[in-house]
Length: 469
Ligand SMILES: [Zn+2]
Image 1 (cartoon, rainbow, N blue to C red):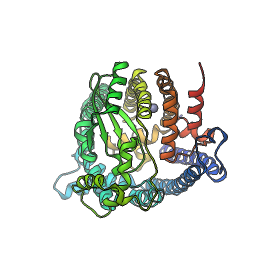
Image 2 (image 1 turned 90 degrees about the vertical axis):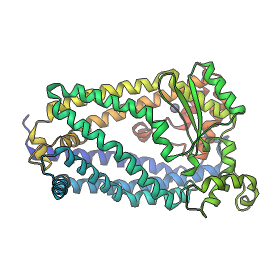
Image 3 (image 1 turned 45 degrees about the horizontal axis):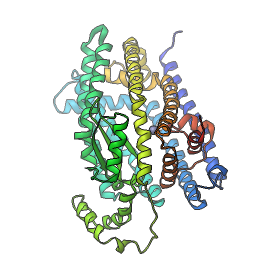
Image 4 (image 1 turned 120 degrees about the horizontal axis):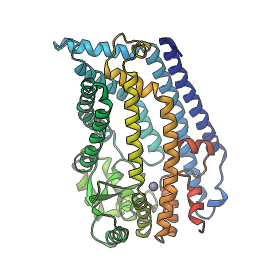
């Protein structure tokens, strides 16, 4: 098969639109359920009230309609960028910026860094109206948003600075390795990416995550003792146990564990815990009067003393899980650890990276690929984008489908593990509560969920928990 440049370009564009059409079709199937299923499904009648179900339905519908418009915009934007040569334009522009500062275009790595910075700024700016709308209109309307505009913007700039501070040196090194690595560069490139991911995992919790959120050790008490006992019972090497102030951003709830070998930490979102959730309403009213983050801590302690002031308007809704339920959630999380789910994911990821770099090595010298996208030279940075993002995209779609499927399997296994710890009842009620608190819509179209859901739908998880072995 002898493809010319325009065949390659057209194939990429057609595939982009085929995937877009497929995903839009799936979303429309699911959106149709949000519109038509207006009554609590029979399986959940006893545990889910009609009011919550209706709220979840409207929330999901709003998100889905938003996703539809965001999707169209993204698709048109990327098509126009491809057709009108946005990439070669930005590449030339980056060269001009360098020249302006007295460097010539022989400095390929520097040019790549300017390019990367420019592309990131561009996508941040064009994405800004969408994320503003999502946070301050949709999430706000359904009662999940806890951020002020000032916090949102500051957080965004912080994220941008931190991600660039990491991405620029890492990408420069990678390009350098590819350029000097010779025929077997892909082995070094793979080794480098493995080393980087291991380093990031080990510094993330101590140095990166605290830049964004506050981690406090879970205070001594019934819950802490319970978690320590649970960890000991399955030999989980628990070193640290934190609560993170997720409620500062959003009232969606979660829990996870983290870390290497014998040095594991568990992080609970404050929104997961009943005791923390009580303070939540109080916090929000106070926060709206205060812009600066540093004064927030004081306001939290202040409101603890006077919780009655803020309860007038809304009747207090009980959110979060009780201790037994939190333990069941952790039983599930620790199941992921005991069953080596993370290790398996890491292994698959490493094999994949190795394969991709090896194939990249075979393709990176094909000038046709660069010409197809409007380049008359073959800079490594552009090769990485064209090959990893566009040429591999059919493979990426298949891989991501398999990983989503595997993730759902792992979720069932982790649930079964918690069940084995005699925590099925508490897990059941925690799943129901979390689904309510997060306004999850419990009805899923089979095709949409097969393609998109990394976690099985609630009804399926409850069914699996009820099954007797
Ligand atoms: Zn899980």
